[in-house]
Length: 318
Image 1 (cartoon, rainbow, N blue to C red):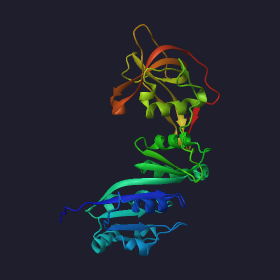
Image 2: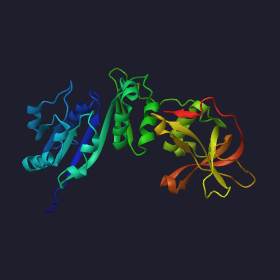
Image 3: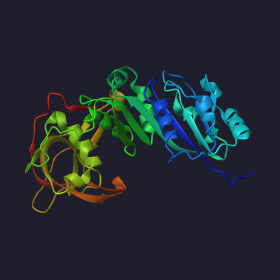
C-alpha cells in the first residue's frame, strides 16, 4: 500500500576510527539539524568513540545494532520501520563491508537514501590507499560527500582530492583539521605558476593540472598553457580538432584510462598528427559548454604544436 511518509536515510561509511561516530554525534547536537525528530541510528561497528544511548533516548533518538553484514536486509529494515516509525534513519556502516547491501531496494518503500558520506583519517590514508585501495575506491565512488579528518599542515589535501574526483567527480570534499592545527586547511599551492604568461606543465604535474582545470575551469579561462601529450583523433573531428592527453593509472593496469581535453584548431593553425604521437601543445583555455561535460568546462584553442619525445615514464599516477 502506498504511503505519503518519506523517511530520509543517511549512510555514513569509512574504515575504523575515521570519524563517523564523532560526526554523527556532533550533527545530532546541532539544533539546526535535529529538532526532536524520531531518529533511528543503525550501528554496524563500534569504535573508541561511543554514543550515550540513555541520554540520546531523551532526545527521541534510538539505536539498533547489527553485527553481521547478512543481517542488513529488507526484513531488518522493515522491522525497524514498523517498530519505530522513524522520521529519520542514520546508518553507521562497517567500513569493511561492501556497500552493495545498502540501497533503496532493501529499504521499506517509505525510506529514501538521502546522502552517503564517507570519512577518511588523514593520518592513515596513505597506508590504507596502498593496502586496501579497492575498499576505499568503492566507498569514494558511492559517496555524495567525502570528509578527511585530522588534517595537519603536512596533509597532502590536493592529492586526496584528486583521488576522490578521479572516481567520483560529483562528490563534495571537505576537511577537518586535527586539534592544534588551525592553519592546516589553508589553500595548497600548485606546482606551477598559474599567473605566468604561459603556464608550463611538467610531465609529472599533468595529473595535478588536469584535475584542477576540470574542477575549476573558471580559474583557467583565458589562460595559456603548455604541456606534453599524446594525440587522440576523434572519429568525427574532420581535422579541425583533436584531444591531447595522457594515460593515467590509479590502482593497477586494469585502471589505466586516457585523460585529455578537446583542442580546437583555429584558422591558420593546423595540427596533423597520428594517434599516439607525442607532441608539445601550447594552447589558450576557454570555458565553454560541451555535451560531454553536461555544462561548461575547459576547451583548448591551439596556438602552436610540435613533435615531442616520449617521457621516461609515460603514465600519470594518482
